Length: 236
Length: 236
DNA sequence: CGATAGTAAATCCTATAGGAAACAGGATTC
DNA sequence: GAATCCTGTTTCCTATAGGATTTACTATCG
Image (cartoon, rainbow over the protein chains, first blue to last red):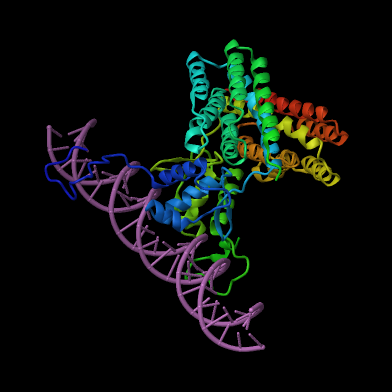
């Protein structure tokens, strides 16, 4: 790394980025994922490979690779020779299926995590609940973004604390869809008080170390989320 | 499939082939997936982009796209600037986690599928069990390949018959790993008689329409598979 | 006025080229 | 004899070019 006396070739490295060499496809992936999560890319919108490449000032090759990865998450769909589109809006049936899947996975996660919890894990969970309480809940997206982030973080932490890589993967596959639904499913943050109380109940159960109770608390939470969403659903 | 007949690639492809136009990346994906499932690509082996491209007589671009998709399934791993490698062998801990995840997902699948079963679905399941019984079980891989395929098909059919796209995705994420473990985990087909009987029990429960019984039968099957695998595990 | 054909633009898909980094092997020096 | 440096090769990563196909717009004809 130290330069030899006879510097061969270009000596001037850009001062801004000395070694932080990163693969462009990763950057593109992160950028697209953020756009999808933030709602800047609305369901049904076309995601042009060339267009995205021009917008991010890269070549189409990294964009193609990033989209290939994103396709496997269900966030975008590929039609063989037509290109990529953002996955369509959730129907009520999709939502019901998603909640069914959450009911199968998340209570198990809570039960498994319960037996492996460490104090630092509990602290992280408590922080997530605290952030949920403190997050602003304004009408614009920028204002309730923190709320959604804390909500997702709480559930993801529990999945990670199972120590089971497959349960983490299973939740991750759902987590993106859950986040997407929160944005476009029509359910706002009218249920914050209830949701916070339920999260607190899950956290209390986990703290108590009673795995059965934690599993039940999580199942109760998911069921109630489903119930509130159905009650608020637009009759389209 | 035409890839095999290209021989010594002399010139570009002949112009008059409008029909059966398909994306090359899909071909590469299928080819690689089959190699991974068949065990031709052993765990830890490097999967060179350029090498695979030469071998399949395509350019590196489709190979890159196929590998990007495969990475998300856990079959291959990517190191930032070093390339792709086949995922390492399962440890006993990995196996325990996989079975824990199966226990969370597959019994639920059986329960959900039970209420939606149609006669044609039942016929497909019965065919899978019949194939399992009839499949040869020789020592070489080519001989018990049919057995593994029927086994995987049975479980996948149940997942699909839930009608829940997310449960299908969750099972698909596990299914590949299960198949990989069957090849490299050390458990042969010494338990065929037990496994067939358990599959039959699950099928009977599904036929009866008793969702609770189907769920229990599937849970019993997964637990017994786990038990037999642990008993047969090499003490490495 | 409406429908159709033709052209132009945009897009996807694949191949090829070139730069950068990592790995392997051999030669040199202590 | 061992460690180090250098060099050649391989591989990954990105950019660019070109063929093929779909889409949109326009002009012409019925």
